[in-house]
Length: 114
Length: 113
Image (cartoon, rainbow over all chains, first blue to last red; front, top):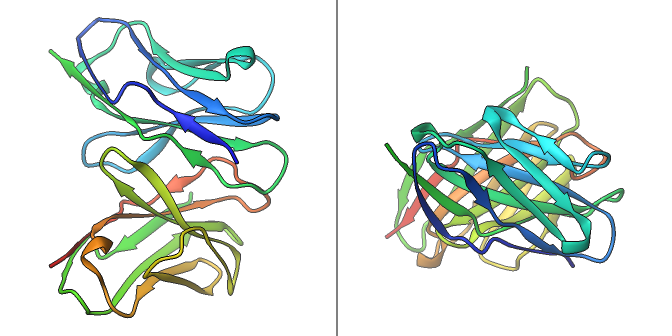
């Protein structure tokens, strides 16, 4: 079975700082990868996803993530955060091609200070 | 467009009472449906998923059960709530045929007293 690790549980940044949230997964085969975001008081929603192709994927609101297969990583990045990026971010993984469940990480709470 | 509803939004129930949380999806047919519990610092725990009417898979043995009486309706139930059932319950759907991106409802905050 697959697993997901998000090493940063709580991150505090000032506005305009750069962001990188770590996500590592454990699975021996091909995977689909996701980042979800939950803004305060809002639904959990998809930020970006990787299924195949270019390992650098771009999502909404200026976020991007890079899939590095050799490192089993899918880190989320944003060059310059805004106060509105304050939210909880979840990485998720599922084996590709079959009907196997998605596994979520424990989440990272990002607090952006104005 | 697709919409997912959950109700109630919040619920306070005494220990030993029954539970019924409802989730409905609009704007899509034959979706996969999911129930998750979200606990602080523990991420999302998959409780049940369903690929069709009457087809329920349980991921975690516990005090809860799920049913899918209609194509776009998913119900989470308990006969007797425990204190440990307190939490934030999320319903989600995805297109049929695989575990692709999921779309989440607003959630139900359950407090068992």
